Length: 275
Image (tube, rainbow, N blue to C red):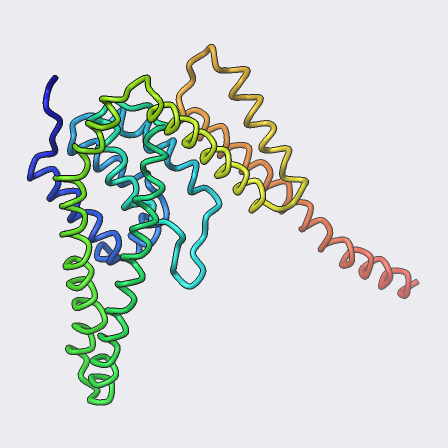
């Protein structure tokens, strides 16, 4: 059997990417990148030269994070870290996407503990920030607010991710591959499918208003009806954007009409007074 491995360069590139996302070193966009696994999955696919399978696996992982939010900046699980480990494991072990979901959950949970440790480091940096603020030193403030937190995050996340990818991912993939068709593989698939269902349920709960359920039903039956046509997700996204635009347009027209009605009534009353 061919030995499964992650190269030094692959592990290094993905580790640096995750560190930059977790440190927000790429600017404000990294805040969104931290909350979704999709971009990290794309980077993993590019690094492993298997974008289609990487994105298929990432789409399954995305389901468990739908509806998850981060009060105070803390998430129960870190999607970027989970994806960076689970997708390589899936690609190496030729796993089903649902099995990769079950791998992503404990890794993402461990990532959340690392993020809490990053908060601890930031509290230590705050002492320097307060000192430089009292001195009104703008250059040192920039260093303590932007540069130093990025350095600390990289020092924290790069070693962890590198070890997890370079040493851990091949071992996990080999264990799962050796049990393909067995009890372990079956358990991972069942757990992964259940977690995806939980993610969808959370999304419906977050939507909140019962009147919006009709859009979920529309999307579901549209996907079932058009399944034989092999329509891509891009087409579904375009159709969804058009439906959303029509809904927003109709809602804004209704609001404008309701706002104009009192004005028209006032004008009519003024005309009556003139007579």
